Each structure stands twice: as C-alpha cells, then as structure tokens.
Image (cartoon, rainbow, N blue to C red):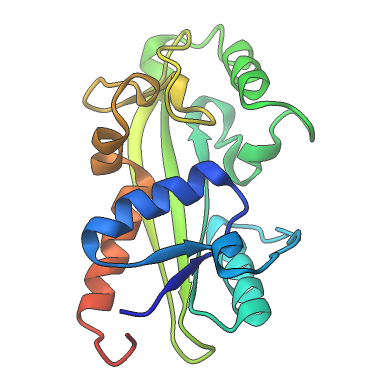
Amino acid sequence: MIDFLIASNNAHKVQEFKRILAPLGINAISAKEAGFDLGEVAEDGKTFRENAFIKAESAFLRTGLPSVADDSGLCVDALDGAPGIFSARYGGEGLSDRERTALLLKNMQDVPESQRTARFICSICCMINHEDVITLEGVCEGSIAFETCGDGGFGYDPVFITSEGKCFGSIPAQEKDEVSHRGVALRSLFEILKDRKDLI
C-alpha cells in the first residue's frame, strides 16, 4: 500500500492517525518524516469539511503525495455549538489546551447536567489526486464534565464524557480510539479504500 501523508503539524493528531491506521494496514507518515514543511495553512472554511479539504489539498500540492487531513472540534449544545470549528482558537490565539478547557468550564458553570450535551466531530478529507477525493465524518456523542477528569489525551479530552460515561482524559489511548470521532472517521476511510483497489 502507498504511503499516506498526514496533513497536520499537530503532533497529537499525527500520533492518533498512526495509531489508528497502522492496524488497518495503512502506512501513515508525517510531513517531517517525508521531508516536507507544510507551513501554515489558512483554515478559513465555514465548516469542518471545508477546512479538512483546504488542508488536504494544500499538503497534496506541496508534496505530490496522497494526503489525509482532518478538521475536528467540540460542539457544545448549551453554547450554541461553540467552540466548533474554532476549538483550537477558543478564547483567542495563544491559549494552551489547559486554558481553553478552563474557559469552557467557566462558560458552562451554570449549566445543569441535563443540558451539558456535546459531541466531538471529525471531518476527514483524503486526496489521492484531484480526481479522487474522499470526504467523510465521524461523530462521538457525549457531555461536558463539571471538572477535569484525568490528564490523558489532549485538547478538551479531560472534560469530555462519552455517552458510555467514560472520560477521554482518563481512558487508555487505544480505548479512546475505539469510540472517538477520529477513530470512527478513519475506520470509515479504510472501508472505502478497501473497496477501491484502483486508488491504492
């Protein structure tokens, strides 16, 4: 199988991509491993899907390699879907994951448990070439905790409780992969690629 370039400079995402795709027989490599600098890409799309396409296309044009990108985030019902596509910039540029999580909890402090529903959404774009582009989405339903639980994962993981009652911040990475939005999306991508031998 050909290599797929992971169109992300986020080290945590690169690790998740590799961990999820490796058992599926897909060799995912980072831009650094491939000897490329992806630079900064203006994620000015209005949806996760649009931003994923922007990143995948940019990586493909820079490298010529089949590229897989994702755009993902946390959507909280009580906050009208925020932080959404601005999850990585919630509260402004320069904040750490811990600071963004603290801001989220502050903005949710008066929201009762029954109204703390939320979901992680991951849009994947796989660009084999300009004619063969695969886009799909993975969703993980859950809710927002009242305080952080565990120090695992990254981003908002320490405050996200799955519908099964498990916190992303306190479960092993492999267990998270089984239910996470990114895990769901990447396994769906694999199923599509498996039936498209002409692409790989």
